Image (spheres, helix red, strand yellow):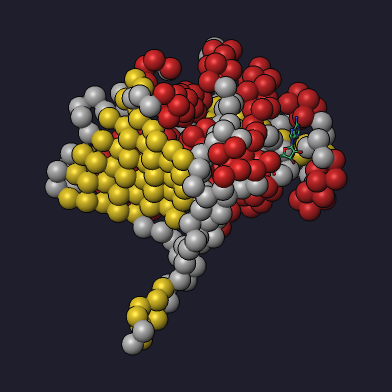
Length: 332
Ligand SMILES: NC(=O)c1ccc[n+]([C@@H]2O[C@H](COP(=O)([O-])OP(=O)(O)OC[C@H]3O[C@@H](n4cnc5c(N)ncnc54)[C@H](O)[C@@H]3O)[C@@H](O)[C@H]2O)c1
């Protein structure tokens, strides 16, 4: 049984707590949060102990650490937990600063403990199946990837202010997904973005609607479309065109009932947001992490993957402000 220390008992930390506790090979041993009320409540619920983050990291009874604290703490906790020899699953992103993320990578490069970054979308069963079909050459050679990712509603402006911007906060998931599907990094990145939903988002220097185009070494293309609002729910789709066909992963809807009447054909909306839509992906992500620890294999999403996605977000941010295409190697 792998004993886990959870750092951060907020929105995503609570989801992970449930996954850890319900997995047959892991147990939630200890939790920590600067909000002691939140940590206590979660600890009571799962029969875990409340400790400080330092106590969790240095506790020899703990095998693995899940970092689900605010983004600005991730790099520091990865470094400390790595030095203590723990297996680590850290939520995305590694940091908002690319140079800080690179520094973290450098600091832990000599360590041989598993360090996985929480890009959960790779583990969505439909996206994983699309990737498998592509790798099995079912549609020939890939040519054009389109990722659509629209949130149901924009976050409060107070969140936007400290988020690092749409590319680092939201599109980072899609950058990682494109790397996962294409099996390589793009050469150039071009971004356009505007604040169309809420002018206050523009006033704090961010965008809420953006399109990124990426070109690969052999000329194939990927397009990522992000919006902070979709009136019909959380729109999460992938489409890839290959030389011999097309693969599409469609939305998962609230129920499968389709009503057809004289007025038209009506089906349910997509599942509302990430906690509902990606539940099976978070479970599969945890399962993959536990499997890597048990079988002593490389984790499926590495710290290098985390730095690469952040570099792509940096390139997109630069492209949007300069109006020019950015070569990824300029920032990576
Ligand atoms: N993979 C995903 O789908 C996904 C989804 C949501 C959030 N996230 C990421 O997870 C992280 C947390 O997001 P959230 O939405 O749960 O935020 P949140 O604000 O709900 O939770 C963060 C928690 O961390 C605690 N915390 C902050 N600093 C701490 C410290 N030094 N020590 C201990 N606890 C500390 C806070 O008190 C809070 O309870 C962010 O980095 C975010 O980008 C990932």
